[in-house]
Length: 199
Image (cartoon, rainbow, N blue to C red):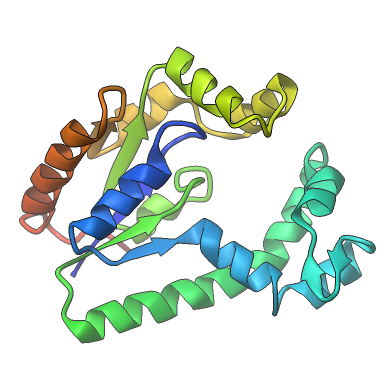
């Protein structure tokens, strides 16, 4: 089985690309969805203990938690120490299940893949990208984020040019879905021939 790491900065089209991998029959592990799930259950007591007032009815209130940690690197580190072991366990369950079912390729959709050293746990990396004007336009069109909040997020992420340089495959989402589907077909044909690289 080959493990593809899928990553890309906010607004690049990564979620759409992950969906299209799913449509092509590839099991996709969504790290963000996994975080949501543990925030609604097992992580809530530990997060409430570390950051009092950030949970409501036994679930993490993401807006409150984000406001508490976003400008505090030490708090982000503390949060990661709580969440990462739980995420690691959920990732392992997903991979064990895929291995048992004989799936040739799986996709790990991990926004901060390079920032967390995740490229060592995959066989190849797919970076989803577009030009920065399109990226900003997409994010601002959602109406959920201020330009300042976007800049804070981008400052924590490896620059797009650096991600592209380190990627095995780059998927450009600037020209609609069909070129992305074509790129996915090519990647899936290619990755099964690549040597296993993860450590």
